Amino acid sequence: MNYALIIAGGSGNRMGQDIPKQFMHVDNCPIIIHTLMAFQKHPDIQGIAVVCLAGWETVLQSYANQFNITKLKWVFPGGDNGQQSIHNGIFGLKEQGCSEDDLVLIHDAVRPLISQDIISSNIAICQKYGNAITGIQCREAILESADGFTTNRSIPRDQLIRTQTPQTFRLGDIIQAHQEAIERGITNSVASCTLYAELGGKEMHIVAGSEKNIKITTIEDLEILKALMQIRPESWLK
Image 1 (cartoon, rainbow, N blue to C red):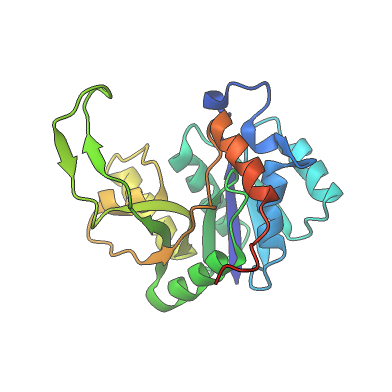
Image 2 (image 1 turned 90 degrees about the vertical axis):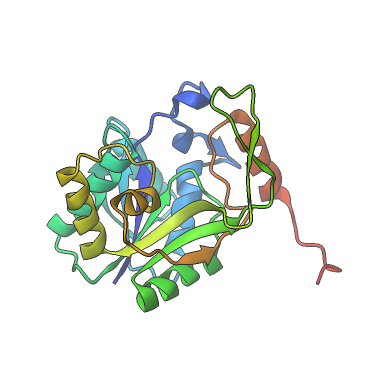
């Protein structure tokens, strides 16, 4: 079985709005519902779980009912940070009887333009290699700065990957990684891929992402999202 685990436990303070960013409306629909719709319509996703910000569970379920998100099976409580929210989600799936061999596609609620191809590639690569990390080859010149204002060092970009979500694992493997992290005192890794890297010795396999698969963090991101949703492919482009 393949399950989408949508992480929506953050309050979105950086956006500076009155409601969490995942519940803000774009094109008359909450951002999180746009995200859920992508997994709802994918034929190889059997179920969806959401790790939800406390107090917004009823709102989430109401929107899911309104927009006919029939694959939403479970809602788990959010944590104090991303690592804790993912922990709550994967252990919640285990408690609900999911198998250790089931695939879990861990995805940010605020990446609503996830494509069907990226979902398919995550499933295929994880089935073949045991995990899949969505990412993009870095194209920008990269500088390192300790204070954000000055720099004298560049970092070669050729081997750098900008990671996105989904990040896909067998349920038993990602649970084992989180258990090992607890034992080693790792409590605030920013993503599943960074957790694997901090644990060391765990090879990860890259799936090609997309510049359209943006994460909505700022007002500028929201403006870009609105623009991307209005774009229609040019017929003359190959």
